[in-house]
Amino acid sequence: MACGPREFTRGRYDDPATVRLLDDQFNENDMQLMSRDLVASLLDFEGIKGRDGSPVVMLGRFRNRTSEHIDMKMLTDHMRTALIRTQRFRFVDGSLRQDLAEEYDYQASEFVDQATAVRMGQQLGVEYLIVGDLGSIIQQVGNDKIVYYKITMNLVDVATNVILWSDDREVRKIYRRRSVGL
Image (tube, rainbow, N blue to C red):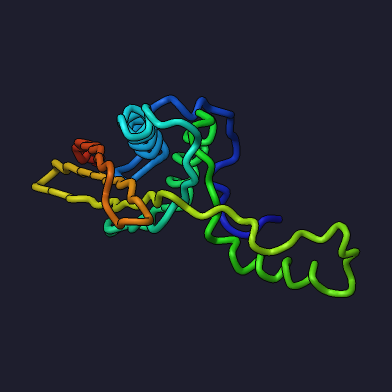
């Protein structure tokens, strides 16, 4: 016999592109709308459109400035994947630096055939850093509630620290509390 009630016993697959607002929290639809629009805006930026070759880019810090727990990695992964699919960018993963350093040390050891060992000093330098912030404003009066999200994304030239491109996207959702009574 199971412990506790089983609230959800049946399920089905659903199209992730279908908008479903079950509650007033940040959801996958918000993420998809914001990331799709920001990726399109960045691709339309003349500094990228008119460029020869694929710049080397790294995702930097995206701060969650909302009162909710929002998986910012999922949001940035969604954007990075869309940008990689265009084949106009090459990305490096800054979170792997420690793992790579350990692997270089191991490959330089006596345990690895030095004819096949990868040598240090071949990683590509990052030309651009993509950073951003996600914030929210919540207004509630009586049974009415408005939740507003704004994400800002910047493309920063690593050599000069100049913000070359910046854009933002907004999502506003309106809710009305239903009266539940007997």
